[in-house]
Amino acid sequence: MIQLTKRQARQFLLLKHGLLGEYKFSGKQGVLDFVRQASCIQFDPIDVCGKNAEVVLQSRIKGFTKGMLAELLYEDRSLVD
Image (tube, rainbow, N blue to C red; front, side):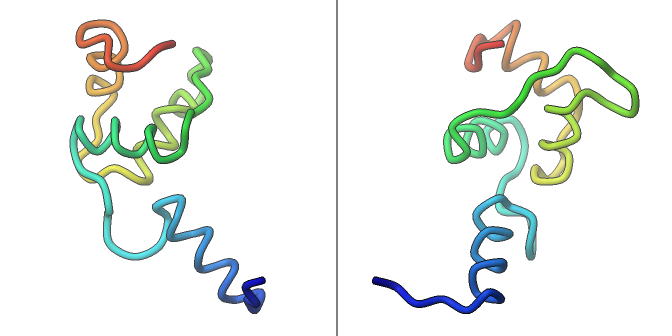
């Protein structure tokens, strides 16, 4: 059994989710790598301040643009909606 402090557990989760430190992922390949690591992301077509998937990826992928996700979904067909 591994013993972790609450602080270590928080840091692990933030690192795992790409929310701590320098960008771990970059560009379209970074989107694919992150989705592969996370297994899935919620895709919601409602766009109040950005679609949920775009907000998630923008906070984790260096240089992310909305067009990258659209290309990966509907042109490259590397991801499934």
